[in-house]
Length: 147
Image (cartoon, rainbow, N blue to C red):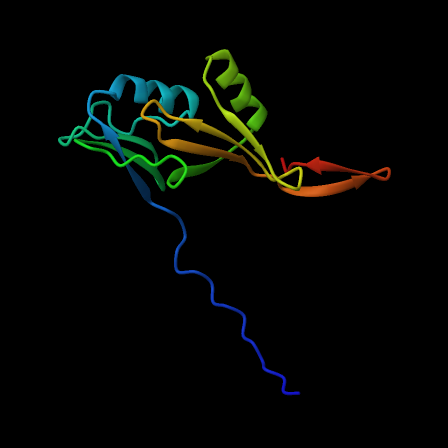
């Protein structure tokens, strides 16, 4: 038997995703603004659409650009935007109060849950809660969040 020494992988050269561009159909700006500003709470970086008609949301280091195109290629279950949220429960409450349809998806572990919701142009958004760690208490396991 021969032992092979493995080196730890070097850290990634990437530190963040700067921005994401999503194609949307023309004429849906008002609905998109309501969804991304009110629901996802992403502020618009520019009060008006840019010269191409794109809406830009986010903050430095987290930018989402919705770019109107003639024929957007929207494939909800093949292409989706996955984002982390502070509370799936709050998102669910907002969706229900707004009468928006969504799908709750659960995996094998309690922490493997997400909400799937479509934006007004049918782009699928996957909302995931960032669970910090498990903490055992009196023979039970409960989820703890770092404050």
